[in-house]
Image 1 (tube, one colour):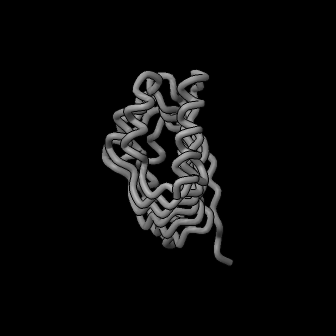
Image 2 (image 1 turned 90 degrees about the vertical axis):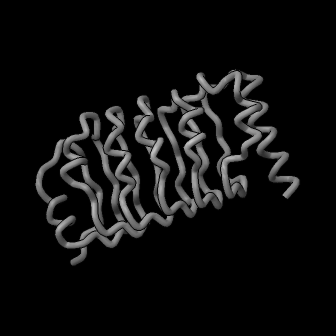
Length: 174
């Protein structure tokens, strides 16, 4: 555990000291985003555009995370155990890419459809059965949606078969 904490501290310090625009906390055994990190990163939160929290054990992401990192463009949360996203994710006015692959989502995070800048959504390997296809079609920037390895119901699969303004990757049952 101490080693994991030291690893997180090292990565955060490097981000602050080097003035990086990205923060990589993947594979850190995190179960949540550490509160202390908000304080340490306070001086650089406006610069951070890319965050990876991939391959941790996170069950949730707080609203505070999304209200702190307001300039975020890419967020990688794949390989966690997330079951939902907080309401504040819908206020991410610069987010272009979110990776939620291999989590424990059983429903589509509806707030994602409120992000006008979102171009890429990866939901591969979750337990999602339905998608708000009409809302997705109204997303102005959406170019790519990955819903492979989800138990999509037949209505959703049929709706995704028709042409869209974005590319859809999905597994079709034969």
